[in-house]
Length: 500
Ligand code: NAD
Image 1 (tube, helix red, strand yellow):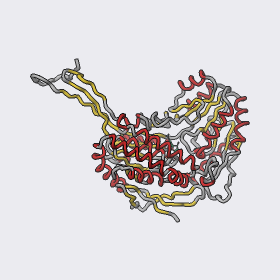
Image 2 (image 1 turned 60 degrees about the vertical axis):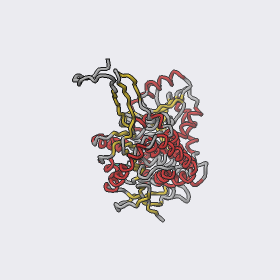
Image 3 (image 1 turned 90 degrees about the vertical axis):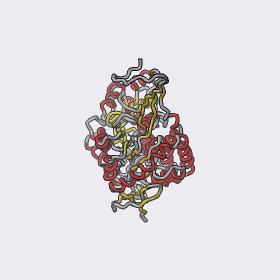
Image 4 (image 1 turned 180 degrees about the vertical axis):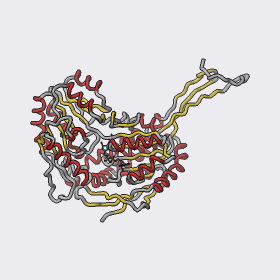
């Protein structure tokens, strides 16, 4: 039976009124399990109006009280962890332990935001001039919005709404229409934690809702995460409308394996980072770059049997499953099409997962693990973000050639080097033009109190997500110059004041 999902407006589940819906699948079975309402511009407008009404009182609530809501939210997330992970896996397809990781990486940002009062403190200069004090304060932008992707339906919404709300804003969340249930559950938990109605609104939808957000006069700031073409579109349209916008896009993350690397460690890293979550991670390693023919031969020899042995199954099949299905039939077809193209282009398909069938789940969106060797820069499988369980190996003749590959790539989200040589690692860290870099760490996702963001076509805008940058993004600085003259008042000043 398919259920009809809702929006979350003013602290209540609200049915969609546009008459448009998106199918939400169980990717393991291929069945439609629910229908997600797709908001019209009028529904977005109504949500924004009630957010704008609720925001001033929330903005005026002292920051410690606001932080206590997040403190309670963290404990509720822990209480409901199993329920959240199950709902997440059922719509996304990732394994239950991985779904818990998705929730926990969001929870950690909620924990960080409990410290918001400290991050919202302003600066103060006493006696900047005679009888003059100068101070700055951080004030909420008002109503902010977040547009999030399907691949982390718990973590990324929390990366967006936790700092925005802790900073005193109201927030409109437009989650992915492919897995909208967990964002609705998070909104319920925020209400249970004490958040006033109207401060977090979940408006489900597609391009129509996104465009309504981008054009809405009341929304002051928009955070986006998704594919690069849409990130660029959202950035261009949102900034043209005068908003503050930060957009995080796609990726093609390289992992360089130097001849002196611990090969077992590198192989473990590649298996997890290349195939975890079926490769549907913006920080997945999708390109392995062994340096030197001997390194490459050793790598493929050790890697191929590990990739062949990966256990692929529905999330419900137990804790030892390595990865599950892709999110939709369209994603499955696209990934299989790219693997075919790689073969046609002359890459060597060392492990061919195209024929993978799951008994009892023949209609699921599964793709078996694929491993390519002898991939070159001109091939589509190298140029495109595959977003599936497919790892490409590009053999490099030297360290400079390997570094050049990562540097020349249009994406700049993550990159890693595996080596025992501190000098090579240091050189790589200094020179590579990529936002998040790992040294013997394949997925260098920064923790909540640092910031997350890619360079080049992986990020548009100038502030990163979470960490102190998030509080800069969701607040505006106001600087006050105050004079309390004593004694005789002077006349008007007509030249620019100088603090002499
Ligand atoms: P997507 O771009 O298809 O969708 C992202 C959001 O944009 C969704 O909410 C969707 O409803 C909306 N959207 C889709 N098409 C639109 C259109 N034409 N106009 C306006 N809005 C539109 O991305 P996805 O498939 O959900 O997520 C996967 C992508 O996200 C990958 O490219 C991945 O690398 C990227 N990603 C990046 C990061 C990062 O931090 N850099 C993190 C996670 C995912």
